[in-house]
Amino acid sequence: MYFAALLARTEDGWEASDTELDDVETLSDLTDLAREASVDEDTVLVYIEQEDAWFGVVRVDGEEDPRIYVSDASAAARSSYGEILLTDELLGREPGAEDEIAALEELVDLDVPEDGDPDDIQDGAGDPAVAAVPDLDPEPGPDAVPAGPLGELGLLADLGLSEKDLLTLRTDALVEIADALGASDVLETVR
Image (cartoon, rainbow, N blue to C red; front, side, top):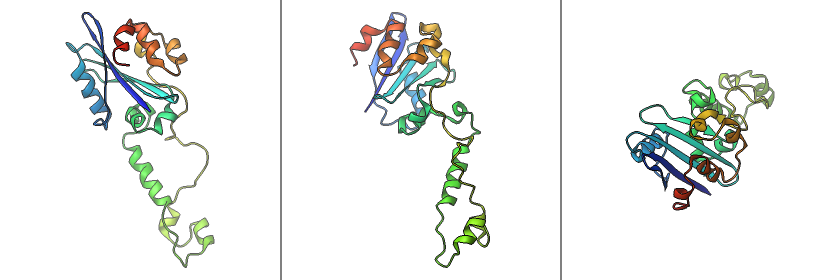
């Protein structure tokens, strides 16, 4: 189960609203959603949580690029909303790396010809497409998603939540984030 909320800073404090992410497919969509909630291009935090698995915070300040923190990248990678937050840049990948991974996975799934010799396939002899299949090494490659926290640890430091405190948050992190921001009362209205 997912929960998503927006916290928008205003002159009078924070405004909170829960939000549906049904129409959000990319980080750009999520950023646009945050900017729409912004008052005078002030800070907006988008909080996404998958119950007992991971949470993510996206901070949007005016027209600046969004800043992202994910509590457990490997858990988030298994989630459709988590995948939105795990950009190539955040993962330290070259843009388009996912396309290359998909192409390699497609090669791995090639059917073996009925008259194909298993020995030929293992040593790559014969079919040139089979020779192009990468070694399926169980070691994580450079495109593997790391377990644990990922992103900008200082994301909320100027708002009252230190890097150390952010790293210690686990389940129900939104309550603790709202406490640090002084937004607990407005958060209760959307929870």
